[in-house]
Image (cartoon, rainbow, N blue to C red; front, side):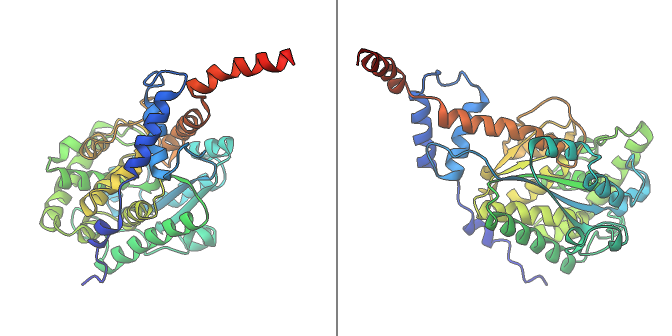
Length: 363
């Protein structure tokens, strides 16, 4: 029996400040560029002001990429274009600067934090600060067995809460959240199908490396079989994560919920994070108000999850690669929205300026 009461998050999570949002909207109406002419940037600036509780909105100066990593036993069935258990190599590639998220983070000057929750590799092959939170090595094959024990799921969830607290306490003002996993999109598909009440085929995508038709059929069958195991535990979100999730997914869910408690905005990356967000919404219905959907990855499971949470992706460039890269691409857009909301002059200020210049020239 778990000692973790997820119902507490319902009481702890508040919505972003509605009064501040109205003040931000009023300020926007007074600025020299007509409201609506900046498209989504208007809405983003107002959302960020409400999340910060500040008008004018403060610039996003201390963002951070946080990636939770894990290998999933279901990958043994050939549902991924990557070999089962190869998540550790992906993590090393990110750390060594050879992945898209590494390049973008370097270019944008954003630090990257990776948290190993269940990689199938020797801990000695990765830095201590990456592996110190690991709950277990790999996860169960969710079509025939649980991904985790309930105790492991609770431990992983608590790690996510702890990491969110660490980031909030250190001054991180926005998190770009992603995953580094092999087989993770299959587990995500099961969660989305279970929570949305759909069939496996509706949520089964081809992943970032575009698996072929045979692999897609194996993946669809794996999600179908795991879905049968998920449905009996739909009423218990922690048990659901233990049954068909994984340590990385449990940690992401805990991170998302605690970030909302701490009023720390989060940009969601791909289908894995979207599935965890959907679990988080089941726990606390106000939590999605603190999250932004970065991109449309083309994964049907992600589209289903975002639609259920009424989150519209910021970008639609067809970026399929994971590891937070797509979410990191959205960061400059959020920063631009904050700058425009804060720095565009109001009409009265613009009208006064020529008069002031004229007075000073006559003197």
